[in-house]
Length: 190
Image (cartoon, rainbow, N blue to C red; front, side, top):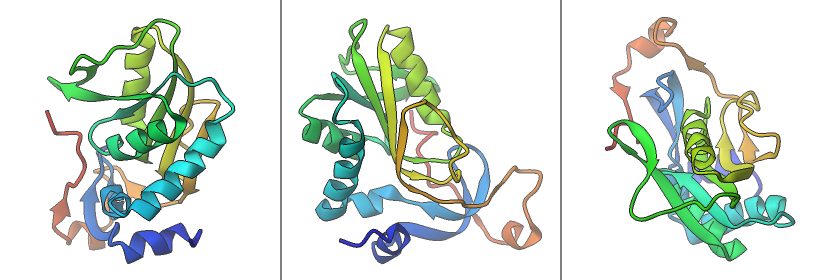
């Protein structure tokens, strides 16, 4: 298996080009659609193995991910670790635990996500964990598109760190403004 992650994303159609509004609200000419790469078992297994290898020496009780994007990778990481896997999802615009999921006070939690730019969804999940008395022991992601600038936890690991350009809505370059906007993220899901 190649470790040229951009090639894997391109080959699977998971690295998109156009004008995208990211989950963070920033605009970009590129978008990592992890669902497209994670639908291939060999990539899902490989990326999960890399995250697991980074955290396997820790005592992990539960893996939690933000819905929707983080569920697939989080579930596979949890399966490989042999621990409970849950997810937080939006209800009335707020990240919360539903579906009978629980966090016991003092439970050691690994947060797993597919892609981060600013890490907003991961931060929201971390708040949920902390509000339920959980102990966050690390954050694992497939793609850190912040170039390493989105530091969410002292024990953080990314399969690949990419420096991709994104723009605030009042600083979009003219050539990007001329392309129709796509909003593929899941933040607006209820």
